[in-house]
Image 1 (cartoon, rainbow, N blue to C red):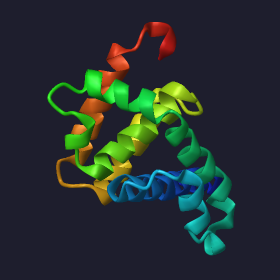
Image 2: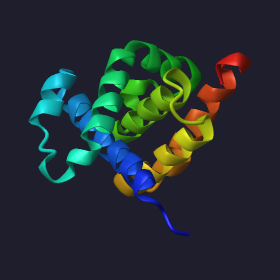
Image 3: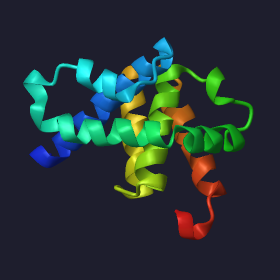
Image 4: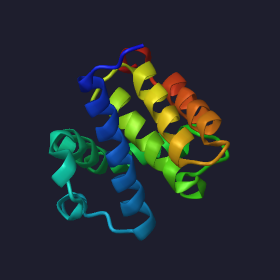
Length: 143
C-alpha cells in the first residue's frame, strides 16, 4: 500500500507531539510553548504546524483529558500509567474526542501504532483497551 506524503506528515506530527508530551510529563515542565520553541524543527519544518496544534491542544484540555482517563480506565489512575502510554492516550482523546480532527478509530489506531514503537510490549494492548473504555463511556452524540 502506498502511503501519501500527507499521511506521513500527520503521522510524523503525532510522533513528535507524543515525544514532546512525554518529555513535558516526565520532567513535570508543562510549558508547551517553551517545549515547542526548544524543539528543533530545522529538518522537519513541514510538520511544525501539526505538532504545535496537537501539543497546545492537549495541554489546553489536559484537565478534561486526564479526568476522562481517571474516571474510565478502571484500576489505572493516569499517574500510575507508563508515561508514553499516558501521552498517547492523551493525544488520541484530544484528536478524536475533543478536537474531532480525525475519526475516533483513526485516533485509536495511531495511538496504538505509536506505543508499539515507543512503549512497552504491553503498551499497544493497554492503550487500545483504555481508549475503548473511554469511547464507550462517552454519550453517543460525543463520539
